[in-house]
Length: 505
Ligand SMILES: Cc1cc2nc3c(=O)[nH]c(=O)nc-3n(C[C@H](O)[C@H](O)[C@H](O)COP(=O)(O)OP(=O)(O)OC[C@H]3O[C@@H](n4cnc5c(N)ncnc54)[C@H](O)[C@@H]3O)c2cc1C
Image 1: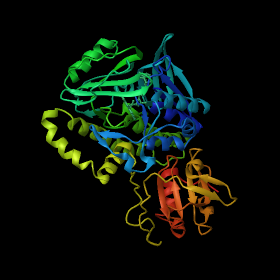
Image 2: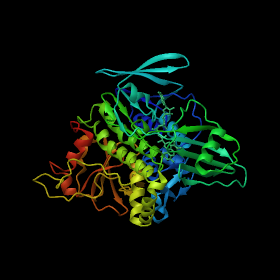
Image 3: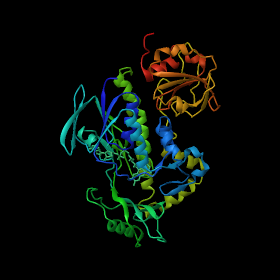
Image 4: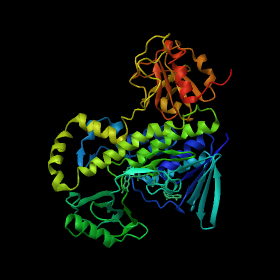
């Protein structure tokens, strides 16, 4: 494999991307500003969709081995959604962000990724043949030359600034504080939505509470200036009008204030953005980490194919085309949540009305699916009215097309029990042949170096005999065996679209 990628930032998006690139054999260097992981977790929850993404590779097993607790409770603008009505696979599970990052880092290193901590990106220059990244460490400044640079360096991305990305957003910030604080037994908190902001207090261990405050009309303070327990107490007092007793702070207190913003383009030549670097918003609905992991899963295999030289022209640009609308939707719904919370006196009638709506299961499902990304569908351009050419039989568009494949249990011809997620473990495409011999797998031999053919029986749920599944688990083609061989619009068109031209026999 030729080509080197520098990933800026060892947060969840950067580590997930690095693992994907490493798995595909791309030489990958992660440069991370912090000298060590601080062990603190902004996100406490992992959305079902993010866990499903990790299930496609090894980290899912490691996370599940810890038996993470499902958390059938979530809110939209502080309207509690009764997600217990939904399928358990749609719940958040409790996994602190620091644990997710640790597992992703181990996975990336196991696939040959070089993680360099204590290195801050301070310069980016790109030309026709590559990118020169200047990093600053305790030893001074040095440059690293790469084919691509991916900025996964968070909401104040230096990569985005240095490479000249344009952003859209409202520019409105707020004043937020969070930290894990020991709390004296019996201390009562007036948590919830108040006229000037939010006060969150979530028990996370014996005598330990995650405290989070947000004041919507207060200017933020740079995070470099350390936040103090007195500052936190004052914020709680302003929001609730009450004095609280707080004990020791575990780790440190942090500020957060990201205005909603999204990069207009996720790619600028040889520099790309993913995660919070590409889209930042108010942390409502616990969706930032999840969206970043999905960005990385979408980008990794495309960038690897581009570097390998077997991708069709334009494959890499489908990263922007597919993920920008998802990021936009996350920004939009986070903004909508803020608009439903503040100013409370103005929005009270709207809240009352909205409170009635969330009682409907269909509304709960819609909001949950939107926030978790479960209802993400990528448009498959060759899938118009007909998926076959004029010569072939007409094939109705499958409801699976462009959606995440269900994790079917599979039984292969030699009796081995496996699953779709396991079939995708290698990070390659998969033709899932459920046709019981009706399809002709020889027709797809030209892609054997990039795509595995798995012939099996599935445990129901799917009626289409042949599926093409991309490495990120999205269904790129689904139809009957006789259409799979059609010269135009059949599976071969889909294979060429996503995996390039077949290799000569
Ligand atoms: C209080 C709070 C609670 C949240 N809760 C949730 C939740 O429950 N669920 C959820 O999904 N999301 C949640 N989020 C959002 C989530 O934490 C972020 O969306 C997520 O961390 C973004 O991941 P990332 O990898 O894109 O960026 P980050 O996690 O911000 O990682 C960026 C990395 O880049 C490094 N870096 C920065 N600048 C440079 C540079 N110049 N050079 C090199 N490295 C650099 C940073 O040190 C950092 O390690 C929460 C956010 C907050 C503030």
